[in-house]
Image (cartoon, rainbow, N blue to C red; front, side, top):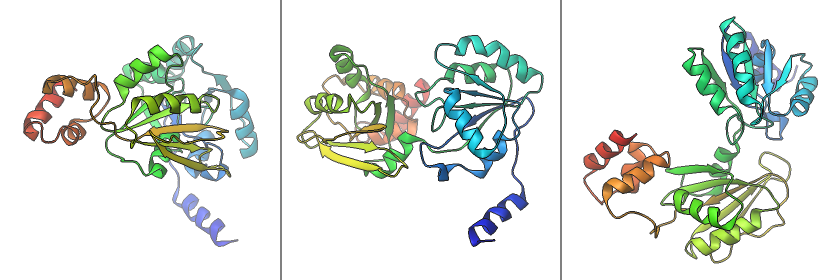
Length: 286
C-alpha cells in the first residue's frame, strides 16, 4: 500500500458521516478535475435513496466511474417547481435525497434555489457537502481584492439591460460574472467602456483542468483570448459610480441589496460617517 493509499485508509478508518434520514444534501462535484472529488462526496452519494441532477447524463457517467448505482431524476429550471411536491413528500417519509449540478456546487447560477427554500420552510434539514466552486476559485487566483466581493452570475446579453445591470452590480468591490466563451470578448469590450482605464479585468478559464489559465488586463487593454471552455470574468473595484446616490442611507441600501454584510459595508463606506452609524444603518436594512 502506498503512502497516499494509507492516508486515505486512515481517514476511512475514522469514519465519515453519512446523510441523515429526511435530509436534502447539496453536493459539490468536480469542475473537471476528478481529483477534486472528496471522500465525503463519495460516501454521501453511496447512501442516498435518490439523486436529483441538472444533467442526468453527466451525473450518470460520474456514478458509473465510481461504481455506484443510484436512482437519478432531473431537476432543471423548467421542472423544478413540479419536482418540489415529490421531494418534500420523500423527505417527510425519511428519504435521503441529494442535489447536484452539472459541475461545481449546486445553486450557483444553477437550479435548486427555490427548492432549498421550500425544504427549509417545511422543516427538513439541508446539508452542504463541499466541493469546488468556480467563483471562489477564480477569485482566489485572480489577485483581485477578496473582501468585499459580489457574484453577479450571467449578465444580460442585450446592450440596454447590460448597461443597467452594470449600474446595479459594479462598485467598490470585486465583481464576478459567468459568461460563455463565445460572448466573453463582447462582455470585456462593454466593461472597458464602463470602467476606468486602470480598472483590473481578469478572465479565469478552464479552472482545475489541464489548460487552466488566467488572462489579465485592464479597462484600457482588456484581456484577449482565444477563450475556450468555461470562463469566469472578474472586475476589480470600480470607484465613483455615476449612478451612486448621494446620501449615506441610500448608499447603504445599494450595498445591502448587493449582498454585502454590515461589516463589509463599513469597510466600503469608511470615512463617510462614524462606523457605528454605518453599521446600524446596514443592520436595520439587512
